Length: 178
Length: 193
Image (cartoon, rainbow over the protein chains, first blue to last red):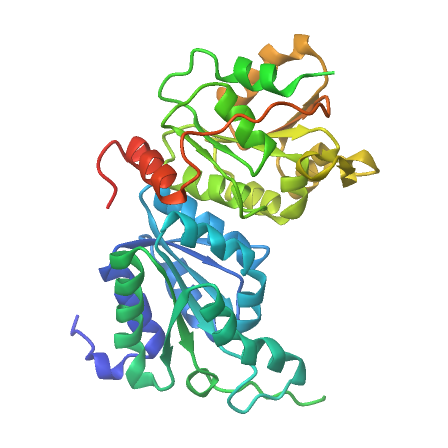
C-alpha cells in the first residue's frame, strides 16, 4: 500500500502515530466530540487499550498506576474535565510520575454555550497552578510537533504535561433548535 | 467486630511475590505499614480518592500479578465511579478490600455514608462487580483471604471493622518519589526508567 504523505493525514492520525511511536499502550478518556476520531482510531488498534472513565480524575490515578506497572498511557478529556482533576494531580507531582493529558478546549474560540466559558477560560490557569506544563496546538500544522513535544517532556522529565487542542483547530460546535 | 490491624496482618501472612498491595490515604496505609515493610507495598498519604484508580491501572499493566487494594470507606465513597470502571474493565487480578469503620477516623470520627443507609457491597454489585462479600467476624477471615488472593476477579469485599483509634505506624518514607521508585523497581524487578 502506498504510504500516505503526512500532509494528507488529519491531525488526529498524527496524534495516534506519535502515541504509537512513543510506546503508548493505554488510552483513558471521558469522551469529547473533539476527541471522537482519535478515540475511534485507538479503539480500532490492537496495540492500544482504551479505558472509558466515569470522571476525568480517575484517569490520573489509573495512568499513574499503569506507569508504576510499566505501561505508558494518556488521558483524553475536554477542558471542563481539567477542573475535576485538580487534587488528583498531586499524585503525579509528589511521586514524579510522568503524566500526559490531551485536552480538547471549549469556552474559547467561537464558543456557543456560555456554560463552557468558566472552565475553558480557567483551564490554563488551573493546569499552571498544579504544575502541569501546557503545550498548545491552534492549527493543524502544529499538532504533530506539539504532541511529540508534550509526550517527550512528560516522560523524559517525569513531570505532568497537557496538550491543549484549540477550539479553532477542533471547530466550534454550533447548536440549532429543531 | 473485626480489628483492622490483625485483619490486614492475617491477610498478608506468609506473603510471597503476590500480591502487590496498594493502600489508601490514612489508616489503611498505617495498617499496611504495621503489618511489616515490603517493597511491593505502595501506601497513599494524600490524593484522596486516587488509590482505587491507581490499583486498577496497576492491575491493567501487571496482568500476571495479583493486585490488592486496601481502602477505607471514606476513600471509596469519594470515588465510587471507579467501581463501575473496574467492573467494565474486569481485571481478573484485582481485589478490593474495603475496611469499613463507618467513620472518617483521621479527622475526628465523623460518620461516613456507610454509617447511614449506604452499603458498599451493594454499590459494587450495582456497578457490575459480581464477586463480592461482607464479613464481620474473625472466623470469616480465612475465606476472605482466599477470595482476595486467589479467586478470579475483580472481587470486592467489605470488612466491617471496629472504629478504634490506633497508634500511627508509618511506611519507610513519606517522600513520594522515594516510595514510588522503590515500589516500581520491585514491580518491574529492574531499575525504573
